[in-house]
Image (cartoon, rainbow, N blue to C red; front, side):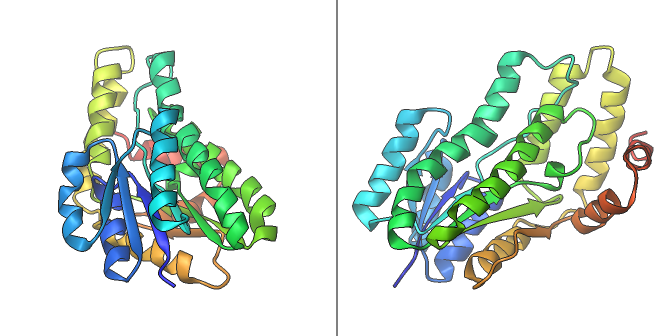
Amino acid sequence: MTKTVLVTGASAGIGKATAIYLAQSGYNVYGAARRTEKMQDLVNYGIKPIALDVTKDESVVACVEQIFKEAGSIDVLINNAGFGSYGAIEDVTMQDAKYQLDVNVFGAMRLTQLALPKMRENNYGKVVNISSVGGKIAFPFGGWYHASKFAMEALSDAMRAEVKQFGIDVIVVEPGGTKSEWGDIAVESLMRVSGKTAYARLAAAFRKSFTQMAGNVPGPIVIAKLIKKGIEANKPKTRYVGGYMAKPMLFLRKILSDKMLESVIMSQVK
C-alpha cells in the first residue's frame, strides 16, 4: 500500500529535494510551505502542494485535516520547515527569538501532535525531525537557532521512547552544510541584527568564513537520500548525518572538551 508523506518547508532546499525524491520513489507526497508559488513545479512530479504556516494553529489543523480527508492518514511526517535567525544574543529581539522557536520547534511539534493519533491507530508511522549539526554544536551568532535544534533533539529522544510501543519510529536527521536559501537568509539576518553593533567585527569575520564555506557544500539530494534510507529501514537508526563537514564536526564534539571545541570553531572565524 502506498505510503502518504507530508514534507514541510517544501518550497526550497532540503524540503523540495526530499518531496521530489520520495515522489519519484513511489510515495504519495504532500509538500507544504507558506510560499505556494514556489511549489507549483512540484505538481509535475505528482506532489500535492498545501499552503502551511506552522506558526498559525488554524493553518496547521487545516493542512492535516485536508490530508486525512484525501489520503486517510499521514504515514510519514517530515518536519523540515525552519530557518536560521542569526545575530548576537544581546542583539536579537525577544520577538525574533520567539518566532525562531515558533517555526523551528512549536510548529513541528504541533503538526506531530495532530499526526500521531492516526499513526497509533494504524500501528505504523515515521516522524522525521530535521535537526542539524547545530543541534549538537553551537556556533557564535546562532544562539537562538541552535536552541531550537537542541530542543528538537531532546523532544525527538523523549518522543521516540513514548511512541515506540505503537509501532512508530522517530528519526533525527542532522545535516551539515547543504546548498539552500538557508545560508543566505542566516547571513542577511546576522548583518542586519549585529552588523553595526559592538559585535560588528566578529560578525564580519563570521560572514567571511561562512561565505567561503558555501562554495564547498553539496546539494540537498544528499539529505533527501538519507531521509529515504531512514524511513525505509526496518529498524532505523536514531540519527542520520550528512552534508558538508557534518561527520567531522560531530566527531570533534565527542572527543574534545568544550573549550577545545570552542577554540577550533573560533580559529575558523577570522
